[in-house]
Image 1 (cartoon, rainbow, N blue to C red):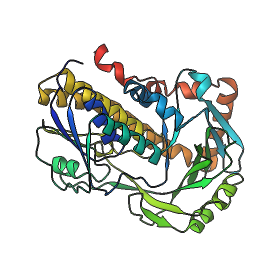
Image 2 (cartoon, one colour; image 1 turned 30 degrees about the vertical axis):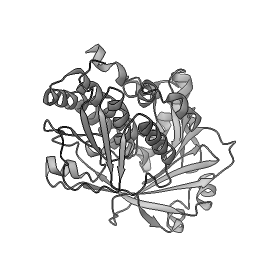
Image 3 (cartoon, rainbow, N blue to C red; image 1 turned 90 degrees about the vertical axis):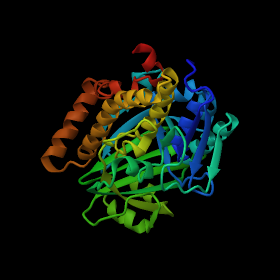
Length: 378
């Protein structure tokens, strides 16, 4: 700790993954932190998420790794299938990097865990605080998500691009004996991702290309029969999972630009407020966690706040832009049709058989990144 944050006041808007992790990182370096959350309670709708090693290195550095591992599962592999259940490829996460930790966790469990840790660290979390304009204070951190008011203040009105893709999410009950692996089923213009969660739960995210507009956001309920109909020609186990869905939410997928303006010397954006991403590379939460650690590190290392925030933006922009682009590319790869689909799956099967570690090694730049050592190596 260099002391740049000791006894400084910081206000964070938003008590999601980005905001709570930032609160912990700042408080750990001596800052006095208040988090403003518009919801009347810390709660999350049912959904799972994946935490990759780049995020887990921050969780460990915050002293939260042991507890988080107790409420999550270790993801052993990602298996790719076609829509009829035939294997296409296996990404062996444990075999490729035995010490790298990929976790599967319920979002609500993660939020509750981070909030409890933040309160123990002396962070004040104020609920029911609707922040439509930047609050007073010398350091305001906009962690207020996809429809960030802090981003709008810095960047003005922006219009995202509808990708003509709609996603459903659901959680079902399942036997706790299920393999701790992520399963991806790829069909023409559609794909489905599913993985187990602690407590005998299974997370499902299903994406379909369609041209009727859907609202952005996770809170819109839909009839589970619509989800089942969209994937009716997929083979087991997809049909079996969907038969068990009792409640589902639907949202339209929109492509947002990485924010043109991240900070102005007083206000700064992190997480989805700065760089919303499509859910095709499982890095939304991980990028937020990276942001939180590196923002605190930059502010602690340089007492000149304006310079520290500019340095944070310069440090983060290239990496998150690359991640967002990789996610956009995955969206296309999952939904191939006809000859392109046949050729792509044939190539993946060949690579899986002949060079099984090659596909995963293409993402070494993503997963091997260690946010906790960045400033030390600069």
